[in-house]
Image (cartoon, rainbow, N blue to C red; front, top):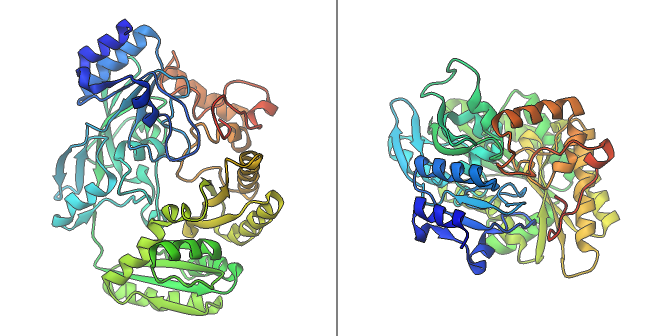
Length: 476
């Protein structure tokens, strides 16, 4: 065993260090398709231990990557250059629930949903709700600036993080933000949230809690054409209504989800909208009537309203368990994450259909229609020659279209290693250089999550072509 591994064991204990190949296999992938095996996995229990691990890595020049639950979809937690993978699974305590000040203090390994469960007895909840909220952890949510179905009304993770405790690449432990909004000085909390572990490792998070709404109403609007379904989103917005959530599923996804979950979705529809309203009871009642009118005006063939909480939860069960349902149909699938303006949803769906025809691959759509966050799901079979390359090309084309439509290459999954080659499409070289200077100010040795988020300084053509890395099934 190398000396540096013995040093790690001295910091956290021998039982908190994994280096056997059969153990490392479990940590070479996340929820996406890329792979990269660490040299060692370590499980700290405190910020002080994380600091000691970082100082060790710095002394020996070893790359270091943070990992939450491994549910990410862009390769953010994949150790691209080996090194030390820091798992926060054992830093999973809820340190404080403070309903009077509407905040909670948690460690990074706390599961997203557990914050809401802990706050529920006081009448509060944690708003960001990724589809993986039963498994994903708050540290990973902060790293990727995760969103979820209710982003439309409540915003993404960055809107609900008040402060952080982080370990810097030199091993220093610092605090950012405060227990209240708008703390003085530079907004380091905002800078770190969404930085994908490339600037520091988060060891504590102060989150904002929201009071549970007085009333909630959930609708399922059913359509015979995808265009009518998509047009409804803009019609609702035009009526000055901001629902808590507007989710869309197309016909192929409806069939996959319904056969697996039995949520009551129609099997013969071209698409549906799952619409949720929250707020004061009288306002929700008024908005509900406006939503019905908007759906009817856009030719919804049926508008169902959940009769009770059980039916509401069943509708959401279908949405939240959709990715698992795909496994019944395809052995492999590739989930993408682009954003377009609401008014461009219909043409984007038509373009995705065209990509599906050209690639010969089925593509389903289930996404956050309210904020234009598209999630095309490309079905392929890695055992069939050429399928991986076709899936890669299809995803690349769709994200390029999103940028051309005035959108973005990611809404919540992050850049990681999956989309790094597209950063040159999204940003000018001057903007990328500014981001590199921020990275170098934090991490001049480039040991924190190397090979992620920012492309190296290369020619324009190289920035915009998807490089393939050894051992990976999809471009870096």
